[in-house]
Amino acid sequence: MNTAFNGRLAILGMGYIGLPTAVVLATRGVEVIGVDINPRIVEAVSRGEVPFVEPDLAIAVSGAVAMGRLKATSETPEADAYIIAVPTPFNGDHTADLSYVQAAAEQIAPRLRQGNIVVLESTSPPGTTARIAEWIGALRPDLKMPHDGEPNADVFIAHCPERVLPGRIMIEMITNDRVVGGLTRRCAERAASIYRVFAQGEILLTDAASAEMAKLVENAYRDVNIAFANELSMISEALHIDVWEVIKLANRHPRVNILTPGPGVGGHCIPVDPWFIISAAPHISPLIRAARNVNDSIPHHIADQVAAKAQRFRSPTIACLGLTYKANVDDIRESPAIEVVQLIAKALPEVDILVCDPFVDTVPKTLADLANVKLEGVHQAVDRADIVVLLVEHEPFKAIRHTRLGGKVAYDTRGVWR
Ligand SMILES: NC(=O)c1ccc[n+]([C@@H]2O[C@H](COP(=O)([O-])OP(=O)(O)OC[C@H]3O[C@@H](n4cnc5c(N)ncnc54)[C@H](O)[C@@H]3O)[C@@H](O)[C@H]2O)c1
Image 1 (cartoon, rainbow, N blue to C red):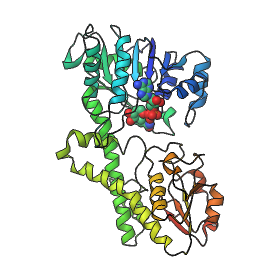
Image 2 (image 1 turned 30 degrees about the vertical axis):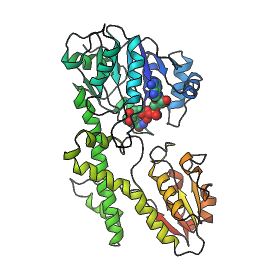
Image 3 (image 1 turned 45 degrees about the vertical axis):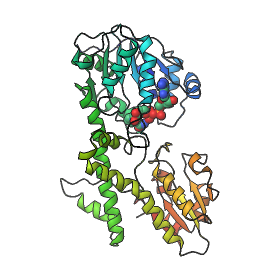
Image 4 (image 1 turned 90 degrees about the vertical axis):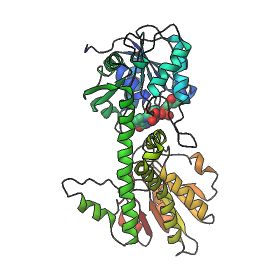
């Protein structure tokens, strides 16, 4: 059955994933209701506005709202299908915090009717989709749930992980291949009908746990590769070798592809998802754990290097360029750049730290208590600084001329000023 979904669809979570998904479905004719517990987000989407920066999303949201195809609300409505795109952070012990997913499942439960589809898009540990069936089943004993491979279930529950790259979400959401893992084969087939509405990539059907694990493995793979690059960076620094040159040369081998070093790993996914594998199999995942530890140690290493350079000056001013977790987006979640600034500011409380980021217009909460940290325009910051630390390769930073950096100590963690 290769038909595309054609009904009413509710998406729980109007964030970086839920809102673009809502828009690509709405602009292709699906009636979409976006649900969020944050009233500020509901109001913004209802006005046709986007509460964060993502290229091409704003125009698509205002169009979908104007057409009457996308509405936003804080109440979970009745629908034919539900997509859950709520956060899945980790707890203090690095186990997954599934409380948002459980809350979303429990919001859907009273509305659910026979034949409905529920898709979990949030990145989740293996077994979470099956737990959704259990949570809903506990509230709706009248409905036959598809766990334990029940072929004649009343509702269809599946996992479809999201692998878009922030900054390219509106392109990749359409073009990427999609993995759809069902609690049963029928669940996968029914869930796939939603993605057939807009996906140009291939839709790969599997079981729910394999889909959950595949997403985690993708990000653990990248984390391990980045940790390798970061470890090479520290080794090369100690040996006075240019790591960028080494990686460029090594990558000319036809089967080598080392990623680029940086100030650590940030964002919502790569620093979080590998822990879901580690906590599922703690005694047999030493490599994935070591990679996490290497990447988490990098902000400390960079802050130590900057503090050592600061010893050369009597009363230095330090400019830190970039606060987001990656280039050309406004997302500061789990940003290693912010951690570097925090560590430098605490290590050197007498030193002025000027931070600048073209995508961030207020001092982030985590830096607000640090009296020696001030937000500044990029040129003013660079001109006033003795030490310039490049933390994020935003386009405007790449354009800074070498003459502007003349006579200053430049510490480039991204290799763009080489
Ligand atoms: N951002 C990415 O690039 C990316 C990529 C792939 C996968 N993911 C995964 O997708 C999921 C969502 O991530 P995101 O970046 O969109 O998060 P986000 O924080 O941007 O958005 C989540 C939204 O869910 C809302 N929410 C929380 N509980 C809710 C509930 N019970 N009902 C309705 N709304 C609720 C929040 O208010 C928030 O607006 C996470 O599991 C994440 O790991 C994210």
